[in-house]
Image (cartoon, rainbow, N blue to C red; front, side):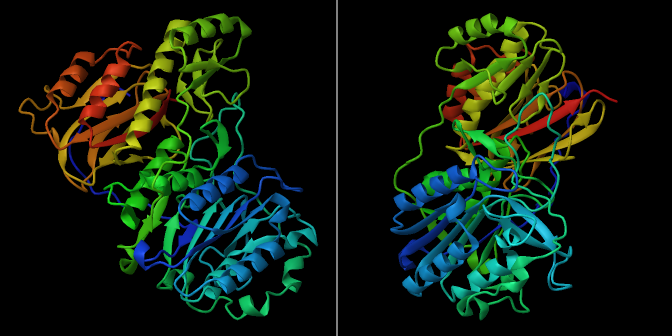
Length: 541
């Protein structure tokens, strides 16, 4: 991306994407709630389909957060203990122990899938969504070890008028937003493709009388007044497992746990509204996955004012802040070690394929753990690789800062794939409040570009303000250097002359390790909100 290609400062209202991957019914306020009770499920150890690495971590993380939030009645089913019968019976027991004003939590992390609908015409796409359990197999009797969307619907209805929160960190269909470079070993995705069942053992099994009487009726579960629908990802995207805080995880579960800890309490009033949760989840997951996963949340008008109680203290260990590095050749190891010695405590050389940044010395490419090329053909020596490392270290600090401020929603059109050289694209940044802004880009090679205020394009400085709820749109075109560009917006209730002055002085220069801590401190001093949007480009052809 090159800012000289073109920049438009017109605002456009973009349609919000939405999808459905987890459901929730939340109490109107913490004071009105009874006791919280939870059933938490996580499956990594699949016997007959590809195993996962982060679902059990997700379950334990959510269980820990709920416990800290005051949930005493909590059942955790992991791996083989999470059988179909165990889940259904545990849910019935949970309901039997609960009172009408209690809040029930059902959390699932594991593989998802799709199968042809059982009731013709019941689904728009003709497919039922399925959660797969540890003993699932294509052949009978193992194929009964799954939960269909109709089973989940019966479980929700069986709760009667009780409020229910259901988290499902899995996916059912779709493709990767961007392809994964084969030089990177990815952790895997939470999607299994299913062939038609020749003998479906589940069809001969029946629900318990208690659940059977709550089997799906003509109305959609989404129409139930005590249900809020939350989307973990836009339809058609596959959810990848990620290394977060040094462990494999699902981004949605991780973000939800961090939100309930208090980070989603954006106005710091002691409660988390659905509006706050929606914005926090969408931006935290999008940024954490570099745009590979785009959550959405749909809130009914009746539930818009609902709130979640938050944990009074942060229980999750702080992100280490260490950026891991590896290279394609052992000959590069001494140079990498020398680089880490200059940033002691911030960089670490590793040998496996899950490093945050991988340097292909022969090709001059730099890749991330997600399998994206973030600099193409330009890292031909350790100095150029070090510039990329400096940029991504600064980005990591910006990400951490953005989670402590109000997020600014970022969108990209087109949103799928790498943008070829010369093609136009749009980046939109939407703030929930009006204010003064500074917008800059970090190009693939670490060069900083000040985008707004732009004295040449706007000598009177009229374009230094962002309007509430109206996207600030940049019309750009893909150009050298190719890889990953990041657009950053800083919003403040007051003018930011010192920050703008520093950004102006750095315009067109590559970031240095000496300046990035001071720049970050200046942004932290000024920012009420921070937004980050990543753009991936490639040469034409």
